[in-house]
Length: 146
Ligand code: RB5
Image 1 (cartoon, rainbow, N blue to C red):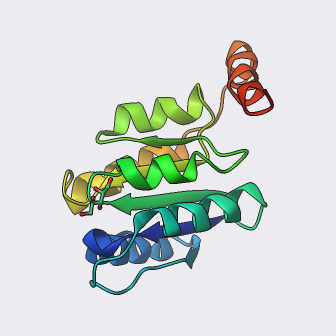
Image 2: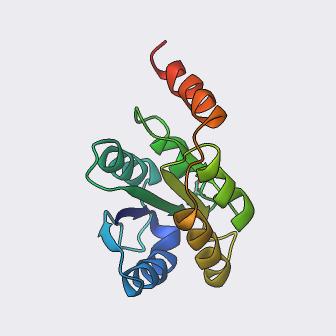
Image 3: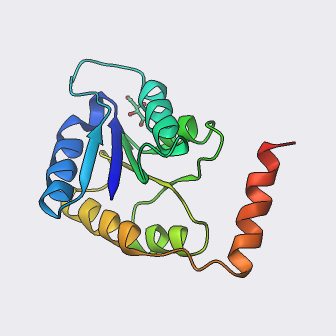
């Protein structure tokens, strides 16, 4: 599985730790940056990862900024993206099972690295249940076309 990652200046160290964690588990990670701690604009990285996932260049995406909020908002503007901010594993897991999210976001200033790893594991390992949830996800995606 190929995972695209992106972050702003507030999450360089968190991104590195999560990237290494995923690579150690055998996932292929495409890192869209930033790898600089100088202040930068999170929409740039949210859009890059959003476009990579929407184009099928990556299976899933993980975005990290200070809160996870701004970078997920940017990714959600890309057609085909369902990004969510999760600060605990339960919502992360259910966001895939019920909402078929394709990007996970979280805040480097909100969660510690060990909790972030639990959130990432819960999200990646969960599977979309389809059925009634497919209809609701279709309804969400239909909004993009109107
Ligand atoms: C950057 O200071 C901060 O605004 C950003 O990382 C993020 O939290 C925005 O949603």
